[in-house]
View 1: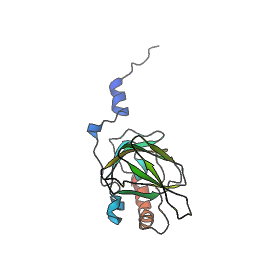
View 2: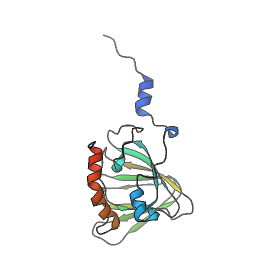
View 3: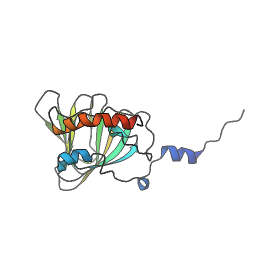
Length: 178
């Protein structure tokens, strides 16, 4: 009985994502920026599609979670949103930001300062966001704890929540290849 030889080139092709092969995607969240320019930010995907469902053949296929980097320009905001099915982690690589946390059904938004190499994990069912209140762009890792997380929701009555409702059907069509 002979064992197959390990093919490191095939392994590398399947499981290694290099910065030189990626580009910042300023369009993936452009629908938010169109509602308010302060929501401008870019994503660079490494493992899985995340909650956006954008078809990106250049990523490592997700098996249990997604991982991307996010560029948040000075003054910009990742708006409050809620994942009902998954925890989300923000790990600050560069810069200083305020994490925004809000309980469902409550008005108060709590702010938690995060500096380089600080990390926050938001459990499912809690509104979370991020605000770069500094003068320089921030760079962070974003990880979602599922291969295909549900599309996040936004606070009821917000312009982003109204748009999310419209886009939910489009997302399902993308995921299902229609």
